[in-house]
Length: 111
Image (cartoon, helix red, strand yellow):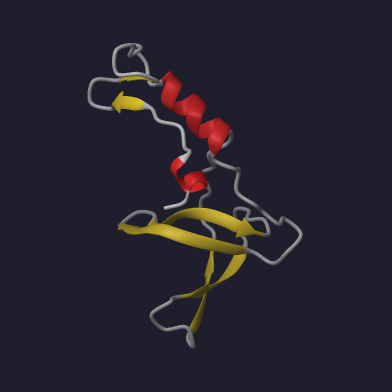
């Protein structure tokens, strides 16, 4: 690894105990140092709202009352309740299905 790759911030943390700190001897009673480091060091995602909708699903589930549930991140475009969408799987990229957004839940300012 190069010197540049080895120059990164370190945070000592235990999610189980809910503690974090910049040195192992000075841990705070919250995970705030971890969250601050993430917000400072990790660049925000690039989103292109004027492009066609693309969403990368990270989790797919099924509910007998709601139907199919997809949890993911919008990479480009915008999404709204009632919108007709095309669905493509990486397993069968030549098959395109259509669907409709029934419910929409959003995480804003997750930081």
